[in-house]
Image (cartoon, one colour):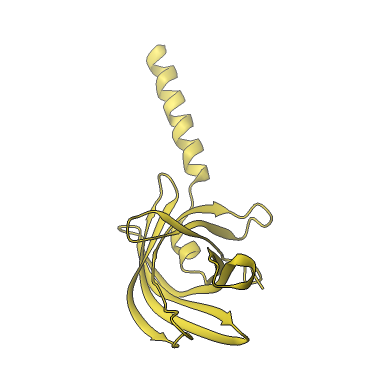
Amino acid sequence: MKTKFTLFALLTLFTSLRSFSFNPEPVFESDWKGYSKQYTDLFEGGQAVLLHSMYDVNFDVNDYTFTGKMKSTIKIDGYTYQASINVKGTYNYSNFEVYIRPTSVISEDALPGDLYWIYSTIKATLYSDQENSNYYILKGYTLDLGGYNESSIEFSTDPYYYE
């Protein structure tokens, strides 16, 4: 009798876990919109805010990796500057952790003065949007070369997330 109960309990647990799983491919292949905040004394208010979009994402369900493009925009002294890069990412379904790494520069505007673009790895966690279950959020940090948190970053599949 104990064996039957154990088997029933395991089947129930497996069924419950399956009901919480989802297909990550359409989630990652959505267009993502977001922002990052870099704390610095070079900007008024002590922080630089960059707007980001990730698009043309292709998710590989065999190894949970993806490739895509990311565009970043920053306003400085009334002028808008943009940079676009190719990215490669990984998704760990067991802890919802996502890494997004820059692979190559597509284009970039020259920034004023001594400023320059830095393309950092992003470490984030995938969440279901609590306000709208049709959307997902990536929330985390950019990492410096030593692997330490550099600036906060958030993305969403909600097209009106950060306007």
